[in-house]
Length: 145
Image (cartoon, rainbow, N blue to C red):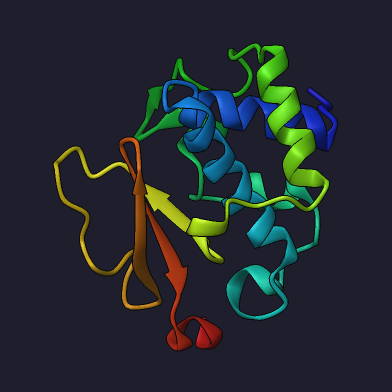
């Protein structure tokens, strides 16, 4: 399917954070846009489009039709965004970010009450938890990725 960047972002927001409230959805949108806009490290070498960021292999489970050889029913092809998801996508594309998020490039749901200090390794350091997701800002080591 040939979705526009707006459509892809709205779908990833709903799929990745649809149950996390407005700030949780804005945080996920902010991470995507932070990756689009960063000029160094792994994401800095990618094409500067939402499509390139979301479809980068291994980054977003919702962008995968299969995970570990099994069909993934919760993917962006099966998700239909609502107006709130488009509104948040437009908010992020316009340059808005959550101020308490910093320049977070990663998030994950630890399925526990605590967030680990670093994720995915020492290139990202914990900055804030929003809903079920822990968010991580790049450390100086990220520049070498």
